[in-house]
Image 1 (cartoon, rainbow, N blue to C red):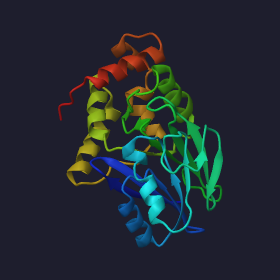
Image 2 (tube, rainbow, N blue to C red; image 1 turned 90 degrees about the vertical axis):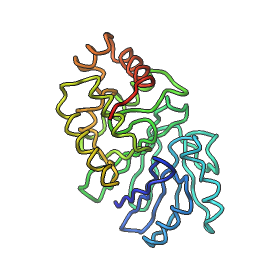
Image 3 (cartoon, rainbow, N blue to C red; image 1 turned 120 degrees about the horizontal axis):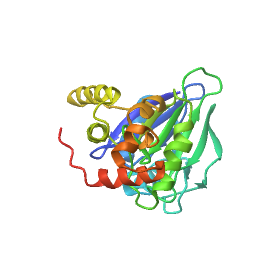
Image 4 (cartoon, rainbow, N blue to C red; image 1 turned 180 degrees about the vertical axis):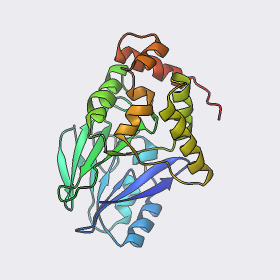
Amino acid sequence: MKIDVIPALQDNYMYLLTDPKTNQAAIVDPVEPEKVLAAVNNRKVDLTTVITTHHHWDHAGGNDKLVGMVSKKLKVYGGDERIGSLTEKLSGGEEFNIGSLVIKSLATPCHTSGHICYFVSDPNSQESAVVFTGDTLFVGGCGRFFEGTPAQMYNALCNILGKLPSSTRVYCGHEYSASNLIFAIHVEPDNVDIQKKLEWVKKQRANRLVTVPSTIAEELSYNPFMRVNTNNVRKHTGKKSGIEAMGYLREEKNNFKAKA
């Protein structure tokens, strides 16, 4: 599979997913349709599908305009009736195809009640699978609990995303990596994996380069929200359960002022 990272707005990411075997393509969270179509035309791919992680305007706000700009009928996938131009309503567990690529929907409610992550694999290839995580899982962090609970985010990160193959590449919805990792060091000051990742992220951003993708294995080594069952994170939070630690960390992060 081919994935083009398309920066949008101030710190969003859109993704053009292409199956090279059939040249069919999907766009993830096309908030800036003009940039999407420029990439589609540049790659000379056949755009068939819009994949929406959640209804917030900075992810789904370009759906209506994009559908109107494309002459052919696009399928628009998502898990929330508030998503513009929705044609395929998902609830989690469904599978669909982009060419020969297999996409499975993963219900991860919390940031929004209808948030969906998308796990993409190629049954005809040995390459690692991919997951588009929207605003559920970021590099070194997670989304705010606007429409959900600590238990829901715990389930999303620890029971669903955290159980994906460790080599799965993670493509998230925003460039928040530096601030997330600064908070992660606050939680685990002696975690070498966090220190190394933050150093790399700062170099990438200094050169105006993206910091995606990470992998599930990497996130499990440095993302405090995926490490709520470790002794270090439990000690920091003073909580006995992973769910309680999740709630504590999110509230702490909401009020944390990162110092670069």
